[in-house]
Amino acid sequence: MKFIPIDMAVWPRKPYFEHYLNRVRCTYSMTADIDITLLRAELRQRGMKLYPSVIYMIAKVVNRHAEFRTCFDSEGRLGLWDRMSPSFTIFHEEDKTFSSIWTPYEEEFAAFYAGYLHRTSKYENAKQLFPDPDEPPNTFPVSSIPWVNFTGFNLNIYNDGTYSLPIFTMGQYCERDNRIRLPLSVQFHHAVCDGYHAGIMFNELQELAADCMNWLTDEQPRTTGEE
Image (cartoon, rainbow, N blue to C red; front, top):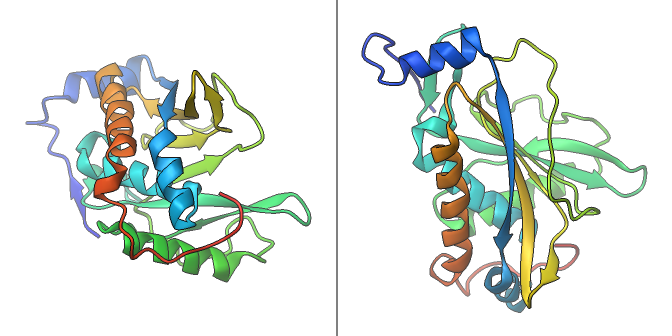
């Protein structure tokens, strides 16, 4: 991983960044449905899980665009990571708590999926919020609320308002008009992402879901259990 500082003197987004960080500091949430009809059918045929598949799609889009990888590093420098990996929540049924773990992003879905299975197996009984002390700084958060099919979701983060990476929350999918739809909410920081970039995020996720036959293969490991 490599952090690339941004040269503010030549950065085209400088006036927008300064306005939405220093004058009108704000984030915004957008929720949209992703049509996963084909994706879910193909995953079920292969005995595979939906959650890591959607995480893979999200990570793929995040790594395509600099706007979704722009943030401050530990030294307070503004820049972007050349590569980001997802940090995601897993649920502990026994006591209804959860842990946040991560897995390295891989371009090939099979490798990513295998990494997900390894990590979830390793920490499935962990009763800590952050059980892995070695999570790197170039991760972004993903979580799921599979018990609710929401139409809107908003995070209220009480800090200095400088966290600029997107934050993803999935809901419970449902069938409507003979299509399976998954609600996904994304929290954006306006300093680095406008509505145009939010549109890119959702449109490219939908394209990946519709194009799943091109990145799913028959060599994937078969699993059982919850999606």
